[in-house]
Length: 297
Image 1: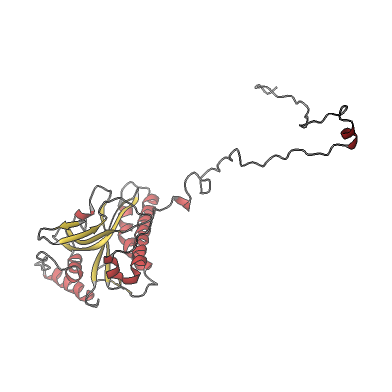
Image 2: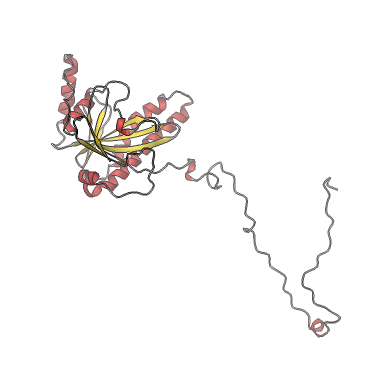
């Protein structure tokens, strides 16, 4: 699907329908192969697992907090989404981490691609093509610098970094200096997800975009969906199987019991010779037993 922006440039977005969870892992796209080479599929898989883990950690924090307020979920996810990404690529070659000056989080760089995860929605009502980065607040100076240094060639005038505040200007200069050790050609890869504390991960996308304004509106240059697995119920068992914690054992089916063994006893020779006096019996006779009535008598 090709989308046109105001300047008439084309933006590609593969599989733009939201909310479709792909269970069979598709081959890598041309874009992901260009960015990550032969490691495109393992990188994509690691990104999905990292985001899933961060969201499940946040859901656990929310569940154990005992409050209806969403602060435990939000604060946990804010930190864990960066931590799980970094840990997912620990043993992969060509991976570095960097903590920009003044930032609480380490950013992960894989094969020259700086990964930046962000939440664009809490449900499926928002199309990823209308995603905003940075939430409802204005975008931070760090995000402006990341887009300016590592984002795609902008089609519009870039946002100014000069705030008019000497202290803030010096802080942004320090941030830019701390990022200068990343090699030339490093690209910013955005990881956009929709989630909430009840349903978990709903959508997961990645690609490249340019920052349009102070409110975090972006224009995707490329955007594609990342397939991910649905987290299993607690204990890793499907509900109703009788194998997970808290499940009752299922009742045996009528054909799961032991097969009866019919009595096969050889007849005495005298009965065989005198069949008129000893006719053959086809079933074993059992004595009649009394059956209690409904009142237990």
